Amino acid sequence: MSEGNTITDVGLHYVAVDYNGYLLDSDGDGTPNYLDSDADGDGLPDSWEFQYFHDLTPTPSGDFDGDGTSNLTEYQNGSNPANNMLVAWGTNFPAQAVPSGLTDIKAVSAGADHTLVLKTDGTVLAWGTNAQNQTNVPGGLTGVTAIAAGYDFSMVVSNGYVSGWGQFGRFAPFTDFTNIAMPTGLSGVVAVAAGSEAALALKADGTVAVWGRSTSQIVTGIPASLTNGTTKVIAIASGLFQGLALTSTGTVVGW
Image (cartoon, rainbow, N blue to C red; front, top):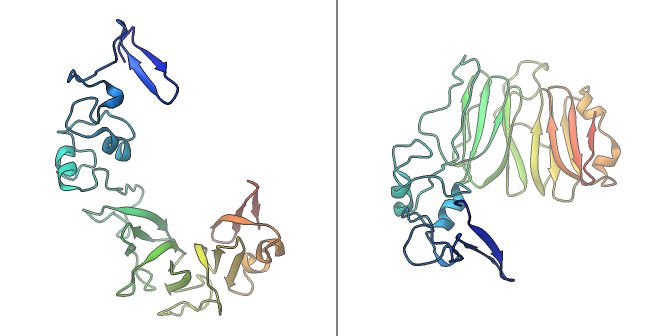
């Protein structure tokens, strides 16, 4: 807003006026900003710019997500100009680089040497080391809502149920599994977390389920209050040998 401009509260909403007291009209089209669907006159509706960029700074000729298509063309095509791109860094051995052209990402999880990605359409991609089949995403897997990459295995949540593949238990006998055995009757799952030899699942009722190697501290050390519902959990995480839970009171429990 230029020097001398002010904002006035008219009760139901705010309007901007210039230093002469006139309603501010940034693009000079005769329509004041508060009534203008494109206040900066760049051909991109303000609501669309705020949806994807959170402000009005991107230009029509710009290419916010660097995919070779201008912001204006993205708008005209009805495509996503921000495209939820994935950026990675660090050692690129073996095969850790993000696949080219990968867009529309909703979530990402990293294992020891592999990466798991959940796309906005509910499908899953994986890349990196595949010595234990951890990047062999099952064919036809759709409707996924959550993912977790363990040391040498991968897990997903679909329709409240957990499935997985790879080697479950990095320090257990080196045996490959096509599917990881899940606890019987485990349903209503909204999130998963994976370590080295154990895994966690957060259920919609705020309880936590755990399974894995019987000697794992994640399995043996989880507080009973997290599994019996005494403490409501809203998020979970796992390291190689430790579990973490964020409770509804904002406190973190670790074991």
